[in-house]
Image (cartoon, rainbow, N blue to C red; front, top):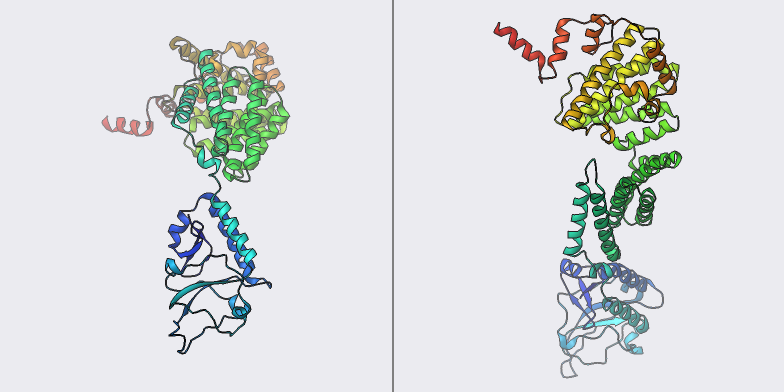
Length: 528
């Protein structure tokens, strides 16, 4: 192995096995170093420079050309050693190292007094050639050599000896695959299998010690915590999250990706578990810390949505509405328009709880959701179900608001239309046994809005005032149905009483089947 100790050209390297300096190629020299050698090389170079600049002696390695002595009588050329000041500027020179027969050890006997005298003659008759002179303190030179040999004779680090085996990787792949297979409605057996495989993977990865990436170990802890949370083991999930967070904190200085990639994920996941335990303040603290690590602008819609839900629990309605609206904008920017309307509807409900001064803003938000939700297309059945649920919820809430504002006929229009949409969705989902868009697969229809006040408060997050307005409406609603014009206005996405045309109605109803209804209508007119 080689240790590079000089940066001047030509490059020489110290060879610990034979204890001499030899010309080497710079790139190959560095590439052959083990990890500990790469760290030690700058340290030895620094020590070398310090010795060169010290007052106690000059550590000089130099190739000198010396002429042969002819018969002991001819003229002898001599070369003088440079002074201490000049030797500080010296460097390795020469075209090639001396032949092996003339190499001398780095550790030499102390030079004689005559050899140290500047300008003195050398008394030793030598063959013509080059030789390596080292002047300095022998003890310091011995120390440098000892350090170099100790470093190169040290065993390989643990990270070089331990690497994930094929079996380790195979177990982890099986564990992650089992997590993906859990699905929306997991069985006990699927959860148990996923947790067992993740536990085995965690044991294997922890056995790798420093060879395992901190992000990978923390991610396995986080995945197992998610499985435990879904199986109802919230305490075990929280323990896993705490362990993952400790790994992130202890390694974030050495690996910046842990702090800005895995650590925010762990914080969000732990906040989710804390929210399930109804520890709202602690959950909000973790969400805020994760948002701080991610920086502005915050573009994590899941974090924004979850934090908004916790803020509602803490009665921070305006701040919750801001998070919901931010999540909606992020989703729109990603082309997920249907999901964006779901978050926008949550924002409108949150604004209803922000006081009378935000009531107009809440109406604008809810009416905007109703208008934009008409004709939304998606290949994802779950997304479509969530949009219809949000759209119906907005219509129900607007019925309560309209009643509160004294518009009984408008309120009844919203209520009837919302109930009709929700009942159709519930019947369709129940008939096809496909309720993936309903939270936890719980299919419900309009009757739940009539009877389940607790569900409105805890699940739909309706403010108490809005629930009271709804109850008053149901007790005193008009006996006669609303006028057809109001129904038509609402079917076109407009507010009841704003006015609409038959063309508006045709576009609104046809858009459920067509991607470009206006163009289709123009084509039909041309055919006539």
